[in-house]
Image (cartoon, rainbow, N blue to C red; front, side):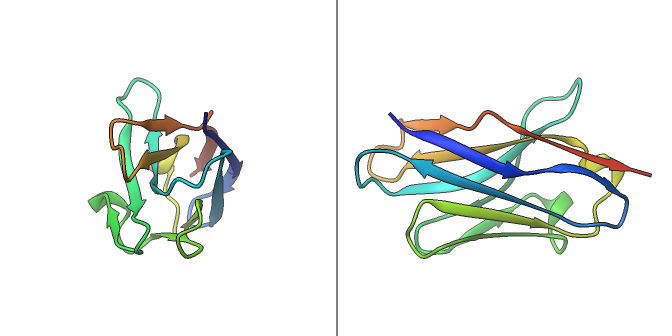
Length: 118
């Protein structure tokens, strides 16, 4: 069983910054592609960014140049630095992990609220 523990989030004014972090806790030594998704009220959950164990990153067009995802080597610890936040970034942000050796096995965090005021 894998537990994704998220931290960070909160309320910030437009133009401000926030940092989210997530740790995958498990008893094994599995390695995960990790990422962040978000879900705004009344909308579907959408990809924000992902990072592979090798450090390859992928971003949604809406956050490119503003958000940076990073991880500590191949450790299952990921952060999302969010700069120049906009009101439309307001959402619940979820950490996500996919087992690289068994991609059908994926996990979600409980979610953390990010609210950006105008």
